[in-house]
Length: 189
Image (cartoon, rainbow, N blue to C red; front, side):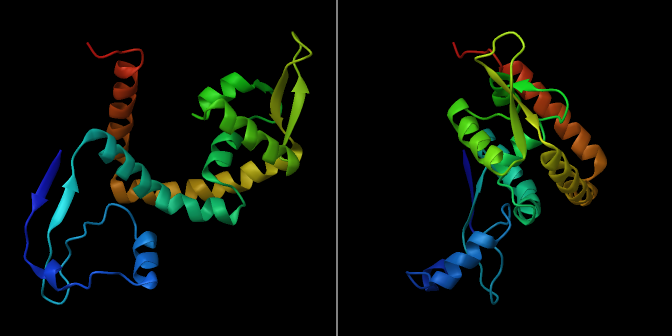
């Protein structure tokens, strides 16, 4: 569902094509900022997305906008970090469980595990029950990387939570857990 907010006809005066610099600047802009801000005393039409899936994506992007630079500084992609933070240095985990906990499809997880193993951040260990199967555990180097990255992520999350409001964050997490629990296993009539 879209809600249109008319603010003026200034959009008619903009050039038809944007320069590469303008496109690059727009990509770097934090998500969630409305495109209808006043420019030089003129305004333009704003379209706000109010559908649940898009609203959830926009909220995620608003948070991740602050986390991505930290992950890049530590040499991780978002997906690699999701895997790393679910691993432990002493308790091996099977790939199926890891795939579920990191919310990654198995083919993506296998590619990520290969990269992390090449970076010597994880180790594959044989399963006790079935030697043909392997489980995943952090290496000493991986555990150190997780500790360093986690400290920086936690500092950023404190600032994000302070900006949103601690009570709002708690309510949001409760609502998201409600959405997940009520929709898991649910099928439309």
